[in-house]
Structures are given as C-alpha cells and as structure tokens.
Length: 242
Image (cartoon, rainbow, N blue to C red; front, side, top):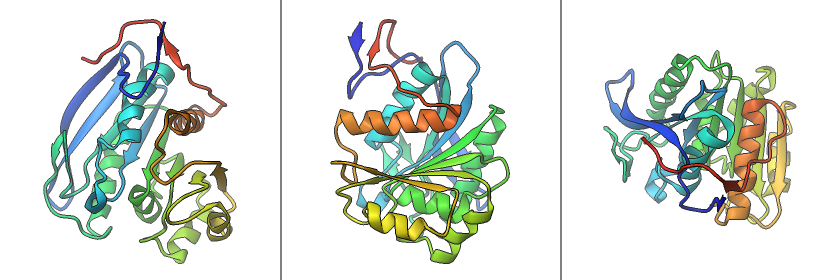
C-alpha cells in the first residue's frame, strides 16, 4: 500500500490533443480516462486566471486528472484557455477578459458531451468559475462545482439565470479566501436556490495542502457519481499513465 500524495499519479489513459473553437483557435487539451473501465461520468475542468499564473496544470486540476480516473472511474478533461501557457503547451489566441473565452467553454463542453458518459459535470476554479457561470448553462450539463468563486466577471443577472436551470450547483468557498468568503458567497448566491454554498474551514483561495485537496476531490466525485464519496488515501496497485 502506498499513501496517495501530492505527486501520486495513478493508472490512467491519457490523450493530449487540440480543442478547436468556433472562432478558429486550437487549445491545448488532455483527456485522462479510467485505465480499464468505461467512465461513470465526465468532469470538465476550467483553470484559474492565466494572467495570474493559472493553467490546466494548476495543482488541483493536475491532481484531479491523476487520481479521479483510477479512484472514481471518472473521465477528466482539462485544457488551456486561449493564450494560456503551461507545461502541456500554449493555446492559440490571447487572454480576452472572459469574452472570447465563451468559445473555449463551448468547445470543452462539446468535447465532454462527445465522450458519451452518463453525466457531465463542469468544475471551475477561480477565473474558471466565472467561465462556468457565464457560459456553462448548456444542454447536457448536469451539475457544476465552483471552487473559490471571485465573481469578478460574472454579473448578478448572469448568476440569477441559473435559478431556473435545474442544474445542481455546489460552491466551495475557503474560509480565508482572498476575494469572496463564505458569508459573502451565501449572500451573492442567495438568488439561486439550486446552489449549495459550503464554507471550508481553514482553506485559502489556492487550496494548498493535502487536507483541502482531498476535500475538493471528494466533493467533485460525490457530485459526479450522485452519492457521497470519500476517496481512498492509499493505493495498492500499479501507478503511472500510458
């Protein structure tokens, strides 16, 4: 048995490819799929602000792709939005203040739906939550998980549109967040009765620390699989990707 830690990479099928947007850009993307079974659900992940160092390889997204396919039979799609640079490569275009990025969201959701898994969940972190809130209310999206939403680019009117969507919304807000803290989040999300705001004691905006990573991934898996999940903290099989 090996304890699952920050750099643990569990058995996963990986495919790096280009997402094509309707306005003609190629975005660097990666599928991480269960090694031996059909995915139980698909998770599409949207990274933090690229102008502040966010990208598809940011630690929560990387750890989700390293663990969730093996531990929860989930397919994980992550990608760099336009103009974003990461160890995986550079996407075409340039950062567009959450305007042109609507085409990036469309391309990612279309790719997620094309996999054909029973359920599609969008997971946004920081800037990624704005992209989900602004453009993620689309046919085929079953649920969303929002991590550290700053609500920087999302208007109150855009947020209120989710009230009639019927889409399950789970909002994880760090107690010590730099932008929006739990009480403020509850006030801002109050017009959306299908939004459940959860304050996370001791956590900060970047979710640094295995304790907080585990909490986030447990919630993502629980939403995707539609039942409470506590992911294993140890692994007894092989590790690595192919």
